[in-house]
Structures are given as C-alpha cells and as structure tokens.
Image (tube, helix red, strand yellow):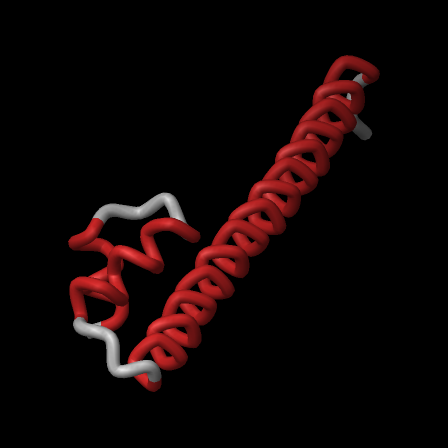
Length: 82
C-alpha cells in the first residue's frame, strides 16, 4: 500500500499529464485552423488566377491584381499559380 506522499505524487503526475494532454489538443486545434486558413487562401488565389486568365491578362498583370487582394510577395503568388 502506497504512503500518503506516494499517493499524492501519483495524483499530481496524473493531473500534470491531463493538463499537458489538454494543452496538446488545443495546440493541435490551433494548428489545424491555421492550416485550413492557408489552404483556403491558396484555393482563393488559384480561383482568382483562373478568372483573370479567362480575361486574357498577362501573368504579371494577374499577379499584380492578386497582390492587391492578398498580402503576399510576387514570388509567393507566382509559385502558387504556376
């Protein structure tokens, strides 16, 4: 039979594990939301590029118009739509 001190240590270890599991779940949810927003952003850029291409705009004009809607560099947008 464990002593009172040993039992208290087990309880504290269990509570610490539960706390860190909860923190891990929260962090995972946060990362998932961030990844989801990034994916939506990329899909929005691709759709916008598709529409602008249908207007027969040059690649540079397309990227410049997308830059007005999204705060990204020319190279970042070029990489996404290429």
